[in-house]
View (cartoon, one colour):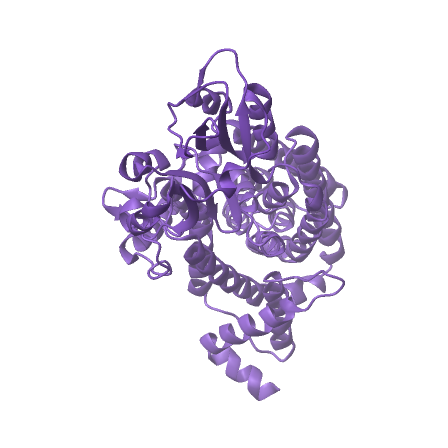
Length: 528
């Protein structure tokens, strides 16, 4: 055993491989349907690092390994969440303000509780950073206090509970995800128009907020079924097929007439439909309207499947590589549409190295920018910088001729690898400090305070998300991870939900505000 541990202490790449492999294996075990998933890499790394400490050996991964894993993870999370993030900002600012308010309250509780326990300001600041698992906050507290020992002791003892408690909170939240009605399943319905006055199809789509689209129309039962144009005038006796969330479709049916016993979508002689994969790089970043399917092929896009999520193909929907578009077109023209969109799996796993490297470089550079603030200012750090750039690039998809986004499958794979690499690094660094700190005189006091702060934060964020913001379970799990700025919690939530995009959206919505708030508050607490 000693020889093996000594070898691992000298070979960081071998140590990384073992931590990734054993942690992933541990995370795959299920008990009553519950498993840790990638978060097991963190706990496995802490255990192995602590074992090395017991033998007088340092089993730590180099800092550059952790930084690389972290920026890969945060950048790809930004790419995946970007398209939905900016569309949600109108409601998202409320979540950001609420999370900042929660952390101000947590900071107040920390100072009050710390004083009652007889802890110094540097230790309280470190405990605050550890309970909320934020390393940049620890760095800010250390710089402000001019002391490394106090903040580090507080951080290392509170950190493990901070991760574990938020994992439990996310687990409890996701137990209710089966009741999550935030997103109705998409459906299609043939409606018989029964109106006194004609109406334009575009008016119906506009009034629905773009949540529905029309795909087919038949002017009387004896006429052929045609692809509907958005400017088509709907008149009494017409049969139309509408696609969208079940609730919205029912509303359209009530407005136009009633549900028809004829299902136009089942009659595929004149029109047919199929899923076509977007693999032409030139189309990445284009909207559905910019494809010009109607003008080119007499076709219409009705749905887009990204990952495991189906969405309505509204005119302003921005496409990404790997999206699967459901197209309705004249039977003889589907091959032309397929060739136009690409419909090839080849190249979807490819990564544009120029766009990818540009995003990482800009993100890391942004994280280095010094932002003036009371107490000396702060930097966002590589994680927040790459997340912000990833969000922007994920929304833009392309900058001029350069594609700066990537397919969902590629981004998900890179995100997973970056995440478990960072977790292995964090666990290897926490093991030695954890053993030393728990055995110190301050251990139990810091543990009690840290547990209190983490619990208050988790309960408050869950309450605000549920009762104030009325968010769904999956987005709330992402908010818990983002508020905690904790990749392990996001990894767990992603694994439990099959990378539901709402998890990443919740994470990205509050992460930047949470990061900045923690850094500033840690500096204030350390200076008291």
